Image (cartoon, rainbow, N blue to C red; front, side, top):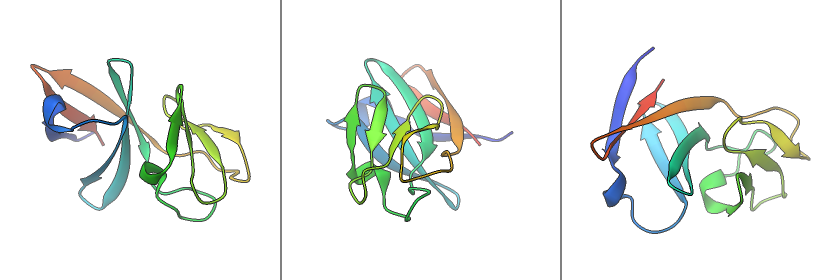
Amino acid sequence: MARKAIGRAEELGEGPLHAVKAGRKNILLARVGKAYFAIGNICTHDKCWLSGGKLEGENVRCRCHGSVFNVKTGAVVHGPAERPEPVFGVTEAEGELFLDL
């Protein structure tokens, strides 16, 4: 498993959803409270960007067709999506965020 630095938490700016590129992977970084979670950023239903959606608690709603995914588990909470999002581990060390790929 590779560990990739993605920047400092303080540099992410406002808002709970952030698009992150790690190699060729498009990842959604979601802040829930003070914790960060990462799942795939492209909706498994129709390939829309989840980072353009809305965070509702620990779920992100896709802006295109309303699919809802849990940002902690990647699970589909509400369709039309049927496949879950991949999940990536996020760690923070001295303000620096890292993804486990």
